[in-house]
Every structure is written in C-alpha cells, then in structure tokens.
Image (tube, rainbow, N blue to C red; front, top):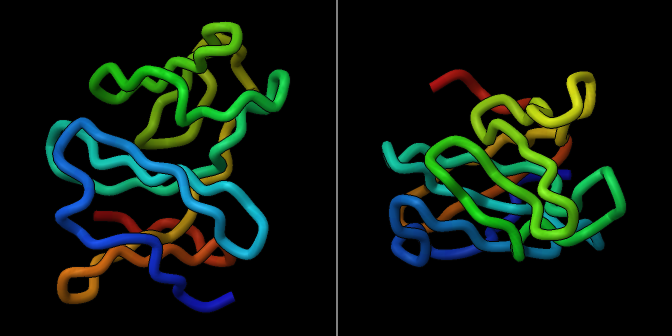
Length: 108
C-alpha cells in the first residue's frame, strides 16, 4: 500500500485523535501534546473495541471498553505487557496527513 491521505493537517489539534478507514482497516491518527503525529491500529486487541472512544491522556491512550492502556509513542501495552498496537508510517505533505500501513514509522 502506498501513502493514503486521511485528513487535512489542521483537522487534528494537539491532544486530539481521529479514526479513518484505510483499505478496510481502522487506523487511529493521534497528534500528541507536543504536536507529533502517530498512526496505529484503531481497534483494541483485548475485545476489539474501537479506540476512538477512548481517552487520550498525554502519551497514554485508555480504551473505553475495559481501560486497557497503550503508549501512543510506541504502541506498547501498559496494562498488559507484551500486548501492543501496530504502528504505521505517518507523514504530512503540504497541508495533508498521509498514512502507510505497510511501512514502519520513521524516527522523528
């Protein structure tokens, strides 16, 4: 898969997240409090609850289903070590945010 446009860069303010369907998969795009962008699976691996309904607290995403927590900078599970969300390459081109589910995120 190549880069897929998901939204305009100004659609996501610091501390906000939005879910998008990319080729049938739900991808969660987060702009953390520093303004850094992260893209990851949008479904909690615990009981497949949509993470968009969760709460973002700085770098921690808390699933609304059963309160499982994930570090948005790494995708690592904080509640259940060893559990993690797949992270994807995200970039801004001009005024648009793109995601590529087939590429690993690049170091910022």
